[in-house]
Length: 226
Image 1 (tube, helix red, strand yellow):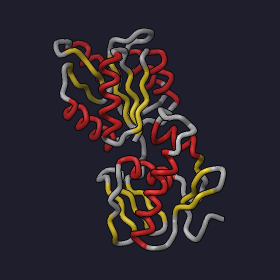
Image 2 (image 1 turned 180 degrees about the vertical axis):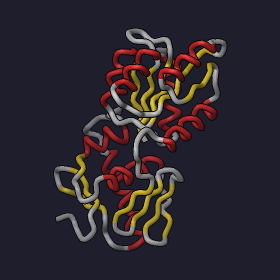
Image 3 (image 1 turned 90 degrees about the vertical axis):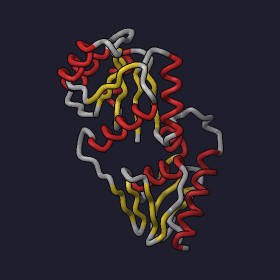
Image 4 (image 1 turned 90 degrees about the horizontal axis):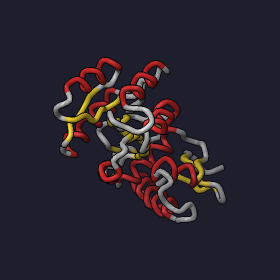
């Protein structure tokens, strides 16, 4: 799942980014309202976490512009505890929920999960290809009758492959989707994690399913790489 954080407080934004990534989310951070509005209106996020007070455009403007553009991505507002007027205005403009500062991360994560389940458009929650099944809500995966014990990154990788089976995914594309390009493009981290995922998929059935497209990337395909 992809989350956009729009927050100008560097410390808070960094804390939220790290915490959400540790939970397995792909995270983008915008430090200004202008950048946040652009990303929220053009990129496919599952949830937007949006502060009210921002440089450039404020949170109210971003909610209004996003909804006027027809984008239905769930929006979670960050508001001051004693600012009831901001809460009411945010919800009236189209925000879906709010958390008051200061907040616990457990509370914010629970609300992010709830909004992601609700979704802003039709979303397939159970992905299937061949004998592999991944449940995006329950965060479970299996091949045939065998459960797959996947790390957060392996789960995110498998999700990407199941979203586009039989299509070669480039290493740089996987870096962007799963690691948000926070790593050196020359790093072998994608190969290492794909290798681990490949072994787990093969161990559950014995038949190869995840293949290497030499010099390009990887492909999920039953029957061979072609």
